[in-house]
Amino acid sequence: MSYVLGLDIGGANVKAVIIDSKSNVLFCFRKYFPLWIVGKEALKDILHEIYSHVRSSSYVVSTCMTAELCDVYNVKSEGVIHVAKTVLKVFHDAKDVFFVNTNCSLGSLEDLLREPIKYAATNWAANAWLLKKLCSNGIMIDIGSTSTSIVIVINGKIDIRGYTDPEKLIHGELVYTGILRTNIATLVDKVPFKGYYTRVCAEKFALTGDVHLVLGNIAEQDYTTETANGRGRSLREAYARIARVPCADAELLNEYEIREIARYVQEVQIFKIFEALMQIRSRIASMGVDPDNFKVYTVGLGEFLVKEAARRAGFKEIISIDDALGKKVSNILPAYASALMALEESVV
Image 1 (spheres, one colour):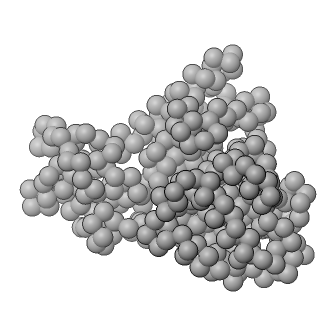
Image 2: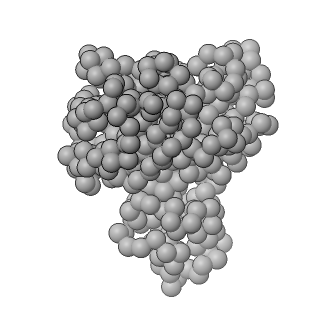
Image 3: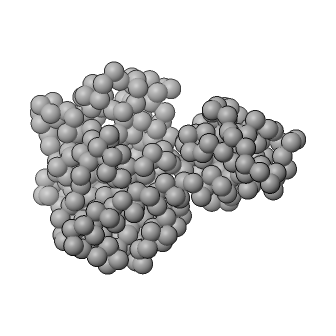
């Protein structure tokens, strides 16, 4: 029996899923993997860890990636080629190895080597392919540890304006804010402080993981990334890190005050995603289509955040991807969608 291994190789996390010919999930894998810390040569080690779970002599690999943006690579094309060749080397006995491209289709290593930039930052492309299968008018918002990706389907067609990360930032299809890794000082220039607003210092004192831990949005075990000061992920330590943002500390600010700072940062995050959604709603409306009729599918560790942003943007039907698919794949969706692409495009 043939299986498909779907991979989503990012610069901060590596995700994998194995599905059978009926799209049943047999294995899921998600691991924090800071490529800029461990180095690009360590990529083969985590892929070997995934390879140890392959129990079939007949399997296909389908890969999307975002790791090429990591600054261990001089340029993106170098990263794309390194990731692809490493995948091919580790999964040497696979029947075939495919890579997701910005056309929302699959290509071979030879295709990738001819046009590597078409295979850069393709997690969104896997999501868009799946969204088209789910509805004729819809938006999918995927928020992970680092960033938020938005894809759109209008009248049964994928409607993407940005095919590279810079283009996606322009068109509101990429918002560089995430649930764990975003430096608070890049989100806000001021925070509430003892009945006033005070400017923040441009230091990496606290991350959004601290914010969402303090607000109860995530549990300590969800905080999988390194912290801003390299210390622990306890609630007490998260409070202390946030207190540093306005150049204070846990003696100058009590927990109630620190929690209000966290709440303010969360509101700014929601607004950034809301702004992108309003840009997209405007685009949809300009095409003579009513954005009120669009379904919104939420994906990723930060679903709670994007649901609120979508609600504020006026969307009525907001659905978790797990509920839509009847499977627990939200935190690994691009890997799962990549596997489905190989399965449903009859390359298995």
